[in-house]
Structures are given as structure tokens and as C-alpha cells.
Image (tube, rainbow, N blue to C red):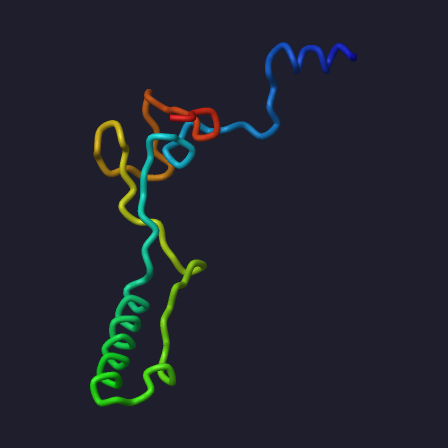
Length: 103
């Protein structure tokens, strides 16, 4: 093993450090929500289906529902410890790495 490799190992050098920010913290919670236009479209679609069922029409012919896993947005970012709103790039002294914490 070279002197450089030994020095890196001794100092626990990491070329890809884990930053102590809220986005990497075990205590940060959030909700994944659909955009408002998808929620509205789903409600309108369901209303149309209910209307078709009420008059006896085949409701399976009209089905537009957005699940939007790729469109979901992270909302309501909060710290579990204090319950306050946070920003992803924020930080505090109670940082706990997501990968290390098994709590």
C-alpha cells in the first residue's frame, strides 16, 4: 500500500462527501404530492365516471386518471425533531445521516 493510500485511509478521505444538510438528514420528512392540475383532472374524471354510472353508460370507456409518479413534487418539508419547516440546503447541529441511521 502506498503512503498516499495509507494517509487517505487514516484520514478517512472521501471523494464524494455526504454534506450535513437537511436533504441528507434522517430527521427530515416530506410528502410527495401530485400537482394541482392532476388532482383537479382526477376529480373531474371521477365525477364523469360517476355520472356515466348513474345513467347506466359504460364507465370503463371513459377513464383518465393521473398517477404521476414522475410528476410528484416534494412538499411540506419538516424536521421531525422540532416540527418546523426546513429547506433542503439548511442544516443544524442535530444532523443524522440517512444511510447510517436505522431508527
